[in-house]
Length: 336
Image (cartoon, rainbow, N blue to C red; front, side, top):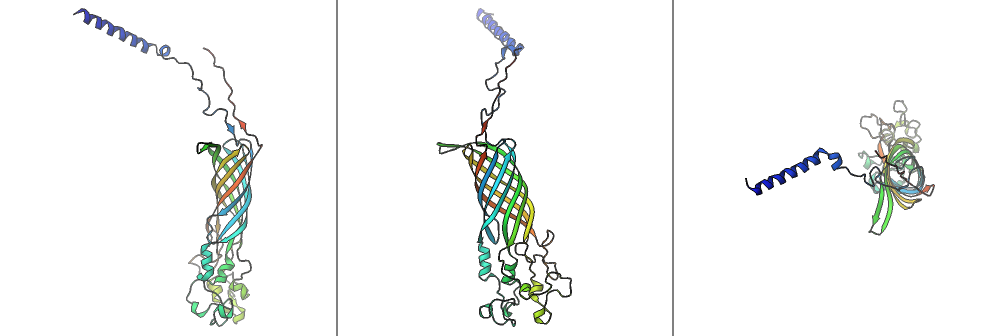
């Protein structure tokens, strides 16, 4: 064995000894001082924009899901947050503007047959004037007369809700690398309330026009008997009963929204809100197994699940106006 080979072996043994020493004492070799941010939260000294603050939001809204009458709303929303991510809220929106949908306009402009005042049913409404009788040329038309549809049609009058609100996302938003603002995204759910009123308050149904004594109790012997026609059964009352589904409803409420903070005490608040209730929009019979047809404004009858979706836009004011900042108490580390 040459001298060079012996020196190589010695160097290899020395290197192996050093590595073994490192592995035998990892605690001493790899011990590190704690980092500056170790044990601290991800965000330090941040604004608590919701915790223990009231929110007062005047807002306007527009219905998005009504089939016949779109509604413009104005109202108020109140909220209180117990922490920065959970709170309770209450809202109330009152209808201030009616807009007939394209469907309703089509129905009113020839979509349904017109009743005539001519009891012989020979002259149309354009000649004899509007009335409770179906003209002869429309006897095979299964659709109700226009005035019966209008007499039963209802629209939203107001909505309200009591909800639990969650704010899972919040942070800072930058626009065009120049404008920066705080924001939060929230969801909510709870109990919703709606109230419905007749859209055409002065329109009478056929039964009302003819003053038929009994147009609701199909089991009675005098059901739909027309006193103006010798007590004969009135076919419009019999085949197209009307019962406007107005009044108060209770259902489910849910939705989501965003707060875009302008200052600590003011934010822009777009929101989508849905209140689901059972409702019979047209107040007509909607089942095929009723003989004779009857209107049953119940969950098991002619009501369907009506989604009352609205888009709301409001300005949220915060009380107290000054938001607090989260504080981090430094803890002294004990030396071992």
